[in-house]
Length: 116
Length: 146
Image (cartoon, rainbow over all chains, first blue to last red):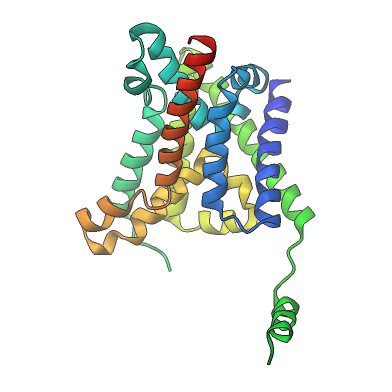
């Protein structure tokens, strides 16, 4: 059942993005940025946590979960150490994704040559 | 040739994009990416005996690696051209943006090429994500107290 939910949720997010891309002059860069901000916004009232419970992996894969994880890590640290946690905990949960992207791109760009 | 005539000529020769077809492809491919993510979480948490949160982290690392590696092999660009937002919105699009920037600027050297330009496309995601998360975090502290 959770597989069906993740298919529907992740597909819907991509469908909305595709509709925006086709009907406006925004570039893919604008749209990914928009969706990150949207993901952070949905976490203000804890909506995104409920979506993750409902859709599982389908809610973790789109870029909206990046914004959600940023604010989620910040708020979790704020509960422990106070207002400074908003800064010190910002990258707690997304660090693995960002580090992986940096390390893999650097190492692979040494090995492969650009195709043109 | 006046401006209106030119506009008509341009719009006549611009290829029409099938919005419905693009949307369906994006829905299907994006949905399959979501199912793949959930399947990876289940496989990792079953075989490696770790919590769901750790499995989700490992799943994101796997998808980032897949995005980077397929970009290097050269056919992720074609896949993105076919599925558009179905592959740009999942985390693979983030990896693809970084990887293609790193590949493109590699010939300009390590520091001024790769180092300075790796976040050229993906940087906006991180910057706007952090700024908005900070502001929304403050908002949430004020409204709900944590």
